[in-house]
Image 1 (cartoon, one colour):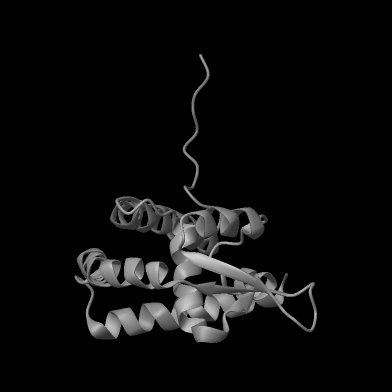
Image 2 (cartoon, helix red, strand yellow):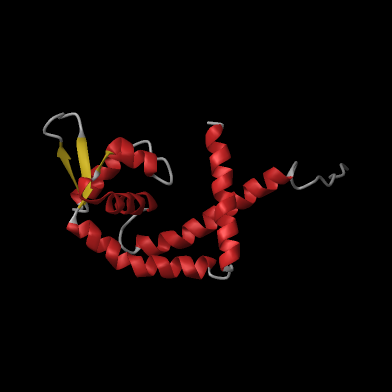
Length: 154
């Protein structure tokens, strides 16, 4: 009968941290999705609405939206098609260069975000409010530092 040998759970501390980040992200994302799913939004759609609200009246071209997304989506055009069909965004061609299409958030999109703002804030506080301000600031700084280094290796 073969004996099962005990191995170390992780080959290095970096692997343990990486897996902890993945598990935490998945847990937090799943809880958050419930907040926006009630309004018929996916995480990517919510992210786009927030990006466009921040862009103001000028809006953004598809490429700029994609660059600001939290999770990269290879088919932003189809995502925008669905959002436009719901009346949450509108797209217009540039009069000087017809290849350029600006995307803007509509009043309906702004209203939807406004209706979610307090719920989203409450959800974030529920999920992370047990951490102190100092812990949150440290965590945020460390995550940003990890992202910066990771971006350099792409």
